Each structure stands twice: as structure tokens, then as C-alpha cells.
Image (tube, rainbow, N blue to C red; front, side):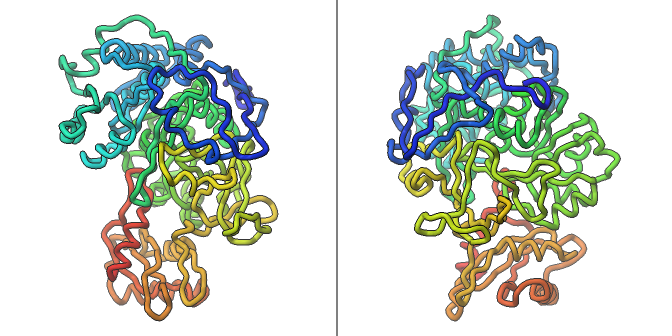
Length: 567
């Protein structure tokens, strides 16, 4: 893609139907049919819509080749693709490493196309090369969060029937710990040691120096099995096609970001999280731009990284923006043109603090692992404070009642989405709950106004019903976060014999204030003065930290468990 108004090189084949149905799949390039065999039943597929802009891809499509080889053909081999952790790779250098990894998988491991390869590591250019190498080899990438332990990895390995693993060396122990119980999980190679050991991926890569011919995959062959982040405690495997990996760049990034080859992407979300995979790998490579991949950031180091690399587009979660706003210096962030927030609701106070500190109005977007990336968002200059944004062109969204019928603007209900990507769980009975009548039901409670802006209320399972009143926990959180002594908070419903439920707040104080009864009463008054009296938190518990996933999402199911056992 060249320039802000540039057109994608291909267009997407429309797979639209008047009723929900499984599209007719093309001839697979996978010798191992595991993934295709475990797609949902035909009557449980979401309705897939035509993408905008007349986008069409060829029947035979390899996403890694499109992201990399096409840039070499365009003469960008010497342009920087990835940097971070002391590494700077051009597109030509990245492509060389990707080809070597693909040779290792197909020749050394003797894996058939369609085999699942588990990837494990923090953000680093080498992890990105592994992901691209798996796709280019025609295998299926199974991405995992670095902090998962042996038991959690075992569940994923069993569900996806992984055939091999590529793992950052410092994380090999947790993978190997459970391998005795997983005799079918195949070979594993570590990477990232200071010296290439005989059993390392780098040592295996050194044996191959010829270009790798991209596997002859179909555009609707499964390229990726991404497991949901576990905010509900029960992650699900979602399957995405080769075309999907390009669609999110050609549809979403093109609309919200308008990336160009001079952009530098930076941020915190792990590549194992589809928010990070898109924002820190697929989007920059599709635009011929570059990305900064570091294993770990703090608010201070990310701000320093933005200044050092002259980053133009930043992806992170609201919690990080709130921390950065407290120490940001506007002059050091002159290179930034877009800051994207996702992963959880963006509190209005966090948006206001960031705008005051940097002069940048936050771009918020809502997405899900099930749809691979975002489908609602706000373009720069089209921000309505408090609203998530409007639906991305190519997608449709509406608010449904519990009978599945659309409701008028301003009515609370269930967010329903459909578009060119959609939910396809890996052999999971929860498919029929997420997809209903062709719509993807995200589990979010929203309002839509008459101008088409969507206003987040809560997760549908987070709505608190107290004495007959519906109370959205995030609304209470938003008010609590405006108190000068509150650093973070989470609000859920706690069981109550008289009211059914009461509002309970879990609060992390700023270092300058200790959580005690005096502060609890002060916070209760603070909320009562700003919201209807029935919404104030009748119970408050102070914590040193909130339970979060690796991508900084609040684990509300943990808070609900604590609330059920007495807070």
C-alpha cells in the first residue's frame, strides 16, 4: 500500500449470503486437515459481508508472502521492518530469517502443511519472524501468552493438537515441564540464547540459505489459532484464515490509521494478543512501515522509546495511557500522530488526562479475538468524548434485545456485529452462543445514538442489578477514577440478601494515600455527588494491584469471585 490514499494490491472475494451459512471453501493447500475439519458447523457460521473498496484476493493466497515478498518486489528490501531488543532488521533481512524458519519447519521437522506450531515468547523481532515463517511454510500459528504456565499451555496444546513449538529460550522450562504428558506435541526449538546452541532454532536456521517458495495455501485456509485472553477464565481457540490477516490491514487500518511507509509503530500488546498482532506486525508490514518490538515496557520506558524511535503510531491499553499521562512531556512526543487505545473501556478521565498532557485526542477502538481485530472505532478528528466510535466501513453493527430484535437508538442492549471477518471457534460448543442469526454477539452491553456512535455500558455479564436498578460497573469506575487518590479501580456486583446485588468497588490508591475507612467514605460521597444515589459503591475493598491479563485487561471474573466470598 503506497500513500494514505493508496489502494490495496488485491480485492477480496465476496462470500455474502442472504442467510447465515458456511461459504463454499476453496481447495485447501493443507495436507493436515485438522483445522479445516474442526471449523464450526455450517449453520453456526456468522454472515460474512463483502469488504469495502472492492477488495478481492486471489484464491491461492499466503499471507506471509503478501506481507513480506510483496515489499521486496516493491523495492523496499533495504527499508527497516522491525527493531527492538538491540535488533534492527530490514525487510530483506526479515524475509531471509522467515525463509530459514520455514525451511526448518518443513525440512528439518518434516511438518506437513496445516500442522499447528505453537509460538511462545515476549515481543521481539524473532517472535515476529517465527509467526511469519509458520504461515509461509503453510502451517498454522498457535500464539500463546508468555506468562502461561505448563498446565495452561498443556490445555492449548491439546486443544490445537500442536505438532511442534518454537519457544524463547528463557521460557522453555514451562513448555518442557508438561511435555511428558503430551507425547504428541512434537519437537521444540528454543531461540534467543546469546550463542546458537546445536539444539537452538538459530543453529537450525544456519543450515538453510535458499529462498523458500511460499506454500500454496488457499485464501480460506486457517493461518492462525488465537486463544482468547482469559478474562472469563475459559479461553477459546479462534480460527482465522490467510485472507483475514490481510483484511484487518486493508479494511480497519486503512480506515482508522491511514498508515504510510514512513510510519513507526510502537506499543505494549503482546503479539499473542490479536490487538498486538495487528497493530505491531500486520499493519506496519502491510504498509511497508516499521515496528518497534520490545519484550517489556514501563510507562517511562515507552515514552522514552517513542522519543528515541520517533514513533508515529502507538498501541496500548487505557491503564498504560493513564500512567504515561502522569509523566508525559509534550515536546518529547512531537512525532506521535495517532495513539490507539483498546483492550478494555477507555475511561473519559483517562482520555482527558492524555489530551491535556500530550495534545493528542485518543483513538479508541473495540475489537475481539473472535473477529481478529477491531470493528468499531473513531478516526482522528471524529472523536465524540465518551463514545467508542462508529462502525468500521465493511462491518455492520446494531443493538439487539434479548429476543434478537434490533432496538431504537438510545436503547440499552447487546452489541451485534458482522463483517468480512467473524467468529469460528475451534471445535467449541460456545460457537452457537457467540454467533446467533448470523450476528457475532460480542458480550458487550452498548447504546447507539442517532448519529451511529456506540456508547459502552458494560459487559453483558457485568451489568449489576440492584433493587431493580440496572447499573453499569464501568460508569461507576469512570467516576471513581476522577478522584485524585484513585490510581485504578474495578467495579462488580456483590451478592446481597436484601437488594440481590450491591455495587462493590476494588480500588488501588495512589502512593500518596492509604486505603482506609475514611477514604472509603470519601469515595462513596464522591460517587453519590456525581451519579444517581443507587449507583454508589456500598462496599469498597482496597488492593495493591488489580488482577489483569498479560495484555492489561481487567479480569472481572476474579473480582466477581472475590465479591461472592465476601470481598
